[in-house]
Image (cartoon, rainbow, N blue to C red; front, side):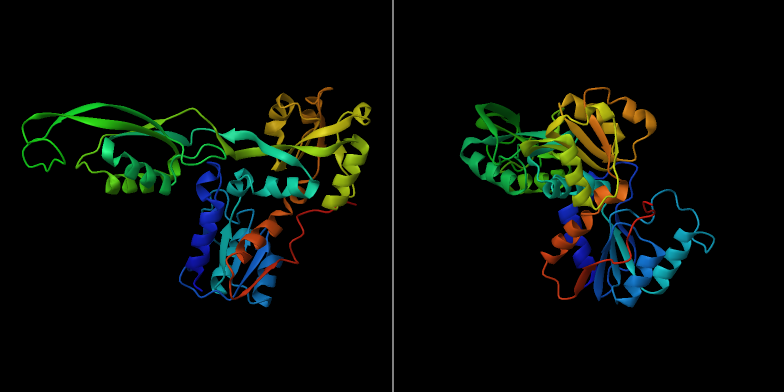
Length: 366
């Protein structure tokens, strides 16, 4: 199998367009036409992980955190990133990363963390905005069903857990065909009135090109009228953080002990010791750095918010409304390796794919 095939597959599952503007997810290093010998899955690309990939004959590393993240202006032996890039290229290894796009997917980093913690009835804490549009087009009555089905097949018409959603209203359209046109109905130079159906569907902007292509192929008019309108509705299946319920309310101390055991943590930083007896039912989570969602967790009436990289004054914002728990950056994202491996194995590859044994994060607790 060529590297290109697995990269196309990963892009279809992890959807790089959902990454944040500051991020650098995707195919970062390597040759797309190289034959794959094996894949090594990791959170971070470190010198130890690179050596492990070489030793295990894995010529593609799939990581959560991008090796090339900020503005890399020089590739030299003067820093760790430069040395790794040089070694990866010289050894014929490739690197692909799924970072904030994997954070934002419902089934991504937070989805698998919620699964491990036993949360149910989960939803996105801060749904993604600015990615939905409404398409409006006008079709002769007898062709409306064909066009609707083409739009649905291209991915339009999804609202939450529903698909094939559309609004349809009948009316009368007018037009006059000019010289050199080939009108579906009416005569050149004459104003024509046609009974038409107005079809409205919602779609994700990332699908726009494919949807418009399918629409034009299915539409009988030479020049169909098409409106693509940005809408304010958030995309509730994609976004930052997650909130869910425990099967039964539990004492905060017992729940935190369960979190420590599940994540393999020797310790957790927790706000407000006088809240230690609070009963936990609703849990908000965000793998990685999630202080920006504290307000969202409070507004959602979460009893506790689990995330990482909290500063001293972040804990102050908890007041008496919520328990904040810093569960570690690497630790909160560690299950992303299992998720990535699971996704790759669904492709039924004929080469070795494994989780790195050398990937352990950048610090330890003592």
